Image (cartoon, rainbow, N blue to C red; front, side, top):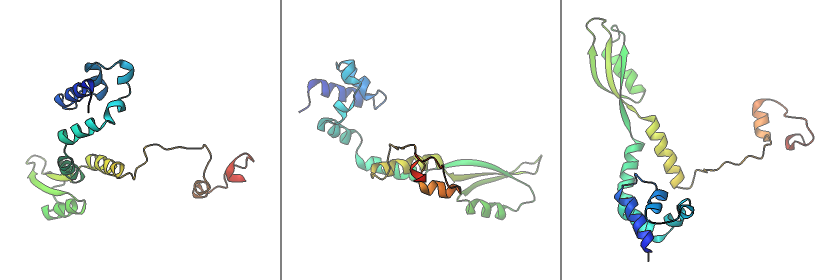
Length: 169
């Protein structure tokens, strides 16, 4: 059962639709600054998980995630007047884009095309999140400071000859 402070902090967070950080929600609910600096004190509780399941149902999140994986944005490009619209269309389709509208500038003769293009930034963020959620993305990278043999071979050298270096042993 959630404590009164936990209930207040969760309510503050949900009422503000995530616009207030968990730490700030905890402070407003009466937690000390020291406790609020570690929001996992609240976010790892069963009551928090239940509130988030209600506030952000998995079905809605998955739907939005799928939209982001297929996100597109409206772009604009100019093509020379001598290029046929069908050739422009083929160029855009080959690039994974969908033509939306063609206009010819009467002064320059340049063909202006608006088209739907994949939103690479939104798709990359959605992919990163998907890999993270599936546990296939390591968020922490550790490095020993030594150059791996495969990297030395890839770079085309024999690597350092220092006897202290793992590669040269």
